[in-house]
Length: 317
Image 1 (cartoon, one colour):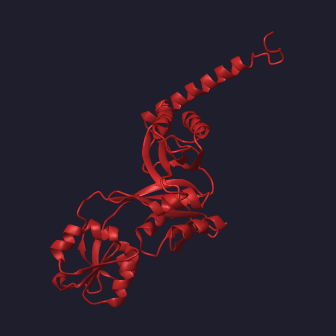
Image 2 (tube, helix red, strand yellow; image 1 turned 180 degrees about the vertical axis):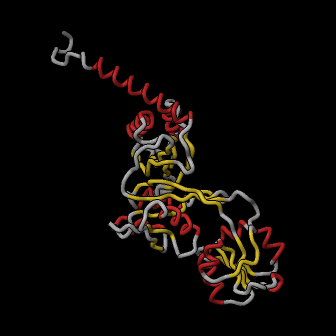
Image 3 (cartoon, rainbow, N blue to C red; image 1 turned 60 degrees about the vertical axis):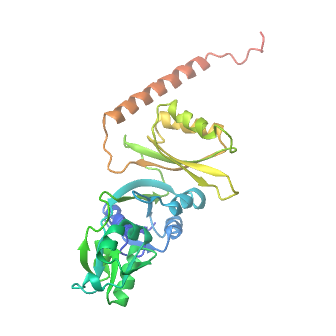
């Protein structure tokens, strides 16, 4: 299999920055830019790449629905890890001495334009704002057209397309970040500080359906860090639920909960079980491990008693 890492391109995107960090884990890893999320997944499925990196959530804009839908409906690949990157935006131009008062056009992805609304109004209020498919494509467009145009991009895109940074840290709010996931064909081993992502398809849309689902995790003292509904794409009004639960599929409580969900709902698809970004083993992880030991002891106790059942005796005798 190729050791390449596919990412949502083109070159110069924030996703490439994330892919570079992933590639740092393995010597010889090379990057493969892809046109969309489906193309990234297809590259991994066909063996053209060993892993893929795609964005899944942004602080300001929420979930990347294209990625959620692709993982749920278009592939059997699994999330193997995640990482978060701060989104630092700059204004870049062909001319390093460009007078902002002369800017006629500003190019960027709609999310980036929205994130810099106050700076744009104050600094280039009369310029036309033009949406691009990505910040990297915005950089390429400005580099090709030249003139009094700006691209709102990351520093990687500015460097890649030969632009000069004329203003830094222009986002309206600090702390904006994007979460990326690494997809592959296998589930990694538990680390003691993990997350499991699943999508649950309910049998029918009825009162209490979501409550019944949530109670399964609450009864096992499992924390859900994400709950999101999405259309199943089969018929209007039919939805599925994306859940992130703390813990690994190998953990007793998580496995017991997912088995209960599978038993009581139409279908469950595991999207991945992997280490949470930036996480370290803590006292909470040790408590979870202790609870899992109690679950195993209970299962052994039950198995021992079931082993005493005389199944050869006729019923009623």
